[in-house]
Image 1 (cartoon, rainbow, N blue to C red):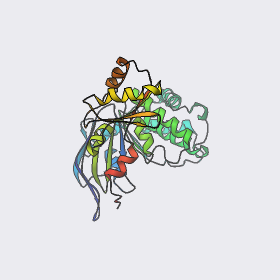
Image 2 (tube, rainbow, N blue to C red; image 1 turned 90 degrees about the vertical axis):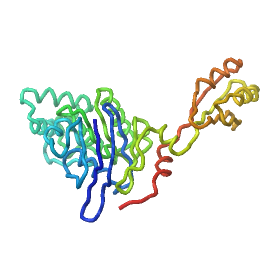
Image 3 (cartoon, one colour; image 1 turned 135 degrees about the vertical axis):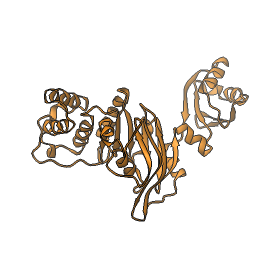
Length: 310
């Protein structure tokens, strides 16, 4: 749904983006990560047809963003990190204005506005002035705005910026709902733990260059991190027996007792919670819990980047 090839952008002598090759599949949530000045917003503005690249190409739904800008804008909803403040303009008026900008027929506008207000849970704020909304409500309204024309692709630049914990959770759940509706979502954020929860794939960019793109599992393989599982058995007297059974499995590199659980490390490229459960059950050992230990996105980011900024 989104593809870039050799995408490059210079501001004078400053290379903000260098040879970016990126592919985002339809229906995915793609987390775009990088320090300030890494090139995230530049990339998003090019994809939203708001900025011309210096060289390279970018495509949305097969359309060249530099040559088919009008068609691309029909397919894309772009949300910047801050929306402008509109004095004395009510929420429904704000949304109707953008519905008109997208040439939505007058007789259809009210129904569409009501629909996006319901989706973003802003019905109660319909008649409220935009400038009196809280930061969280303004972010919801900005998201409602980009949904007015029912775009296939959402490009969201720091949508949770400045929000309190409850508002961030609500935005996250809304993004999950939009994914269920079939939207392709590209989202940048500095809150890596939240991107980790919702993203199908992530891209890490630094100093204008893409240093990684893939799944968290692919990050683990890239960094050579072995899969680990924590196992708790019902009877502590059975720990030694469980240790013996698991140590005999060829897929497992190491097994040790740590505190009140058993730490299991798989060989490179191996994993399988099922084989652990099956082996212990066949050995008449009851399991309380079996929890995979996954690499955190924060840790991966620190290992894959060098702290370089413009």
